[in-house]
Image (cartoon, rainbow, N blue to C red; front, side):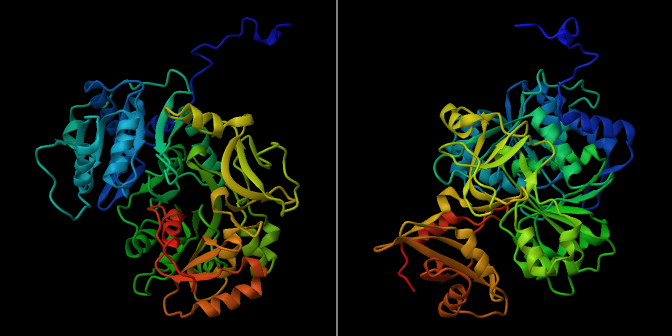
Length: 545
């Protein structure tokens, strides 16, 4: 093999090569805009110089407790300044950040702590009882540091535990924090929901976090000094990497402990929020708020959503209220959103129904994602670009996870053939836009025909009485499976099974019409995703309506 002449005597040196890491975003923000407000939380205003110093203190204090490269530091925290500091201070010590979903039960938290081999846990006082219950079940015995948030109006915190502010006070604000030895080093571990078995630990690296964080800003055209409201949980895919994005654009984080309509509307207006993220349920929360809570906005707010496609009426209501909604798509394994519904100006002149259909598509790849396609999972050949032929959505590139921690079999399966297999079924439209049709496990097979639960849900969402719809398979003696629809009615609206069944007959092929309708509050995760596994369990006890 002939050696490439451009590689001779042209080696990497400290002068021309540094591992990519999003930690440098905060260092630059603090050196260039030290007085710019980085964090707003209630009455608290903290600038970038303070944010950087506190993150270095945290890294220093962790190092004093023996935390170093490859160790796991867990965080059981809401969207508070402490959680933002963990996204910098923990990896600055060389450790890996493990953000825990605060809605989980003690047994699952215990599993995660053991599997991640956690050495230290930083916990908000609100969740201390939950952590204590989990530690009784866990094998690990981590150091516990308690953070007391002045904005939490709850029970008093136990006084016999190490306090976060005292812990920070012992750290050095000038600490020479650790760059990763390699940009492939882990920066975080996030666990999947584990609905089909034990949760899997998704390992992200510094390079991917650096690229996705910048990709957020570039793909969504976030301006310098944008103001971001934390309605998306930071424990969810590291807040889609926005804790790092905001430092890159010298933006302002507006923290929020609980997602409630009144404080959201107040912060949107009073803090001049420009961006927020959330599931359609957050949009519904905003739009359905009483008039005495809603505020008139003197600027347009960008709302990024990454769950089920929002109903047409909800999109129209959001636009009227001053929001521009952009549909994103991704998974924990892709650092959060890696696909965007990039909007064409010409689409804005189309009828509302056509615009809604276009907005329902997931879209095209983010700038830092190298490959996005819909492939036949058996042959690994791309499906026809006809918007009809279904295949599995697959990803390839630098914003795909390292793999699943301590689970080589699952890693090999997920990355087989040089692509990350998402498990999502979709189609590719002629213009190159991907549209999801279902999770592979959510496809309903009735009489040998595949029924997309999303297609049935979209038909139900078009009915004015339907606020939330979720469709799962119900066993059927003759057909094998038939659709079962769980429905949450909109406030003040009425509908029964016969009316919705008739509506579906007008909008769907006969074999796709649900045989059973159940009217109830739809269970959701803390990030607003519908918990279909809970509904599948409920189906077993149902009698057709």
